[in-house]
Amino acid sequence: MTLRHQGTALAGAVVAGLVLSACSGGASDGSGESRSSEVGFQEEGLPIVTDGVTMTFSGQKSSLAPEFSSMELVQQWQEDTNVTINWENLPDSVYQERKNLILASGDLPDAFYNTGFSPADISTYGSNGTLIPLEGLIEQYAPNLQAVFEKRPEIRAAVTSSDGHIYTLPAAEELGIGAVPFFLSINKTWLDQLGLGVPETIEEYEAALEAFASQDMNGNGRNDEIPLSFINAWWCADAGDLMAALGGMPDNLDHRIVRDGQVIYTAAQPEYRDAVSRLHDWYDRGLIDQEALTQDDKTYLAKGKAPDPVLGSYIWWESEEVVGPDRADDYVLVPALSGVNGRLVGHANGSDFGAGAFAITRANQYPEVAMRWVDRLYDPVMSAQVAWGPIGVTQEEDANGVLVQMELPEGVSAGELRQKVAPGGVHVTLREDFETVVAPEPRAAQRVADLEEKYLPWAEPEWYPNVPFSDEEIQEINSIETEIKTFVDTRRANWIAGGGVEDDWDAYVAQLEQLGLDRMVELYQQAYDRYLENL
Image (cartoon, rainbow, N blue to C red; front, side, top):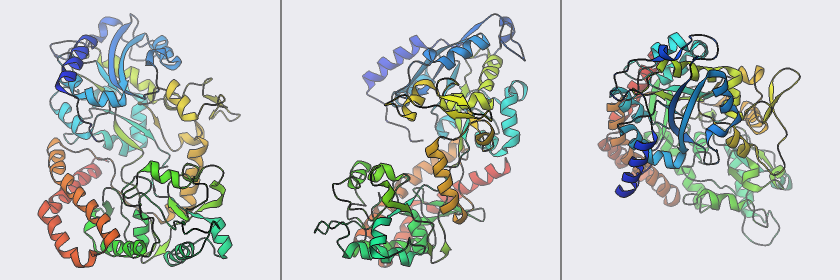
């Protein structure tokens, strides 16, 4: 996660005052002595405490979300557990600016819910004692989370820090909808006009682009057709998988893949050079949108909705967003194209799960209570409600007892309603839960079907997961990677537009080595190896 810039010193001082007055944590001396027994703590069953207890939670929430305490689901938690939460969660953009002030304050909250912590935050505040290790509490008081770890050891590995401790708890939706982010769509209506089939090879695709460029496909008498459009270095609109067909190795925004257990920096490989050279050829011949290297998403998404259809093909995960519902049926997905190394697409780095859903601070006088409280949210049915809303409000059981989305109120989108009634954050829904506990949302189900049919059988079998780094690793990687990524992304755009990659290549690779590429890859490799050892 990218940290956002903090505000001015004056704003910081005001925020600090608000934080100090708002947060009412536990023991101010940080002794860590538990007082759970004083409030009638019960190791099993409900309520969790017989005498009632209040804790303060901080963290982030959706900008559309009301105060958590007003949510029906959260009110039910309080009634069930006899634990009252003083919620100090802030909209994510505000919270990211104030997070470090909260963590550095002398009056910490008892816990962070939906922490928004970066790997650097977890490493720093875990090692300095601000966040307490949770693995002992998990073993004693978190049977639901333990069951998740037993089913998916990789989730435990993802939340285990380099020092062996667990400082934050996981969140996961194991549906895999982001496994291949670059969906390539093509105008099937135009293909039919030309008597062409949906391309299956990079040569057939190139021939279609040439036809789109040379003919008046929309019949308006103007040369306004755009054979291929994309957004350079955009998470779901980059040309990384076309590079797999053109050069033999996929690219991604990290320029990092894994093959045979070895971390590879794609942008230093000859396959990358060859793909960039081919993309320049396409750009030079007018097959690629001349704004592809500079446009933002607003400009990109507007092109598909112009009065006359102009897009021959584009990269984006959902056609309706690009061309609108009235034209979506004119476009079909292009499957993984066969290229210089056969059919191949990349696999996104990261995973469906990660750390940072929940953390307990050293100020908490009732850590056992907090762990039992949060473990209830890892029950599969409860997790579904945390993520998609309460039963009877946004979800209902079908004839098989599986939760399905209820009919939406008129004029309200599923995403909008979800943010208003579901706190999100702490939840795990495993792959099998999507079959027996909660059905995927319709759009998500369609994306999964498309992935399984068009892309996943030909995706890279390995990828770089969400791995924990030590504080020292993070600092050293950041000191190297920022400059390297800027250099690489600038050169790629310049080469696609202006050519010259073959002539510049040796000097470019030498510059990468001078900037510390080998050391950066070494750091990513050692963190990856350590992650595998923890599985």
